[in-house]
Length: 365
Image (cartoon, rainbow, N blue to C red; front, side, top):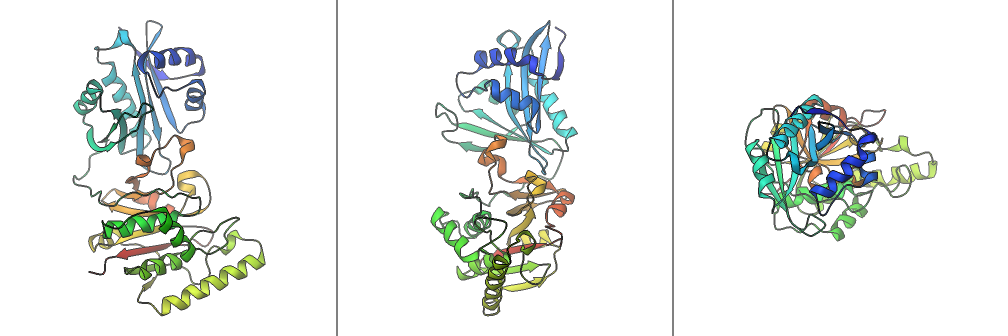
């Protein structure tokens, strides 16, 4: 049978919905989902057509600003199974991901679907996580990953993951991850997430609750018994450009000045400049919290904290505590994100002043 692979169009909706009904009993994509995937998603929906029939599809989503792609769904019509169509769709998706400068492709598969698991593992995917109660019917999922660009083996994944529970606690969430990586028995819980924010916030930023300054996060980590290195490229109160109200600016200056006074009374190591020697920091056991511009990830121009989990010759790997559910993301989509060194360097420059800031946390031992 001659197969044609092409991008899905809205005229495919009826056939795609029929394929969903045929292939899945739960977690089905509906008409609105498919319309969003075809017209708006940062990804591609590829269909396989033969003799005028839609015989299968594969949907890949790209994580903006990173080198990560996710195989969101794949379906094969009953009459087309056993003919190698699944392998061909995987090859198309991997080629598509490479064209979008992706280095990794990740997916989830039900643990009770041995045929699908075998397909993925035959094609080079490796298991790296088990997710309990993942599907609508409470079935577990295996998380698989394939490096579609060659690289060194043995990437460390020792940093745990914690998703921020508010819009303004990315810094505290990252600090919880750093502290738990250094002290694995330490519990990551929301009560401390909020307490860390209370200690480290600059009070006002653009509107509503304020985020955390590097000085505030450094002090919060130091108070909890950790050794801390603070690296900031600018002197003075940060984030003032995003605030119009002079009264709010005065409050921010007051908070910043108090942070500076407390830092002088601490043994936090303060380093000027903005370039991070990540290989050395990681080799020395540091857990780097890095301030980035979220524009590179979400197109929103706001300061945002991430934690670096590893780096190699090609990529910096990040945990992003912010799970963007509007992009159909799960927590696993925000862990160990591969970002090219060039893209990471652009991320780490915030605002008109090109602010660069990092808080590196170490154990006392």
